[in-house]
Amino acid sequence: MDAFGEIFQTADWKTEKHVPVIDCDDKVKSGEIFQVKTTVGKEIAHPNTTEHHIRWISLYFRPEGAKFPFEIGRFEFNAHGESVDGPNKGPIYTNHSVTTSMKINQPGTIYATSFCNIHGLWKSEKAIGIM
Image (cartoon, rainbow, N blue to C red; front, side):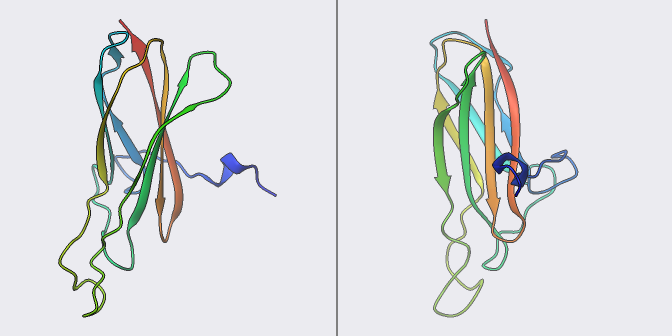
């Protein structure tokens, strides 16, 4: 049986449309609020159809030297063109991108995970320092 972490796929986000991309400053001021934007399909657009879509993005922060991460948030995308008129005929499509605000008081790593309903679980990470 695979370890849980082994079921997450990863790749270069510039060539793979499923990888969650974390955009934020490399260093932030301790205790000050900053924004983190996470997008799936930043360089190569990911489809957003009834049949093929990103269901959610989850973000975590693990302080340097800590054993466990802290959950920042989980963001679900629930409208993919479904309709009583049929697939891809609905009036709304959510976009698999989220911006959230947070503050930290020590350096660490932000982890992003995402789930594609066809291609499974994906992950990425970004180290963040304190100024």
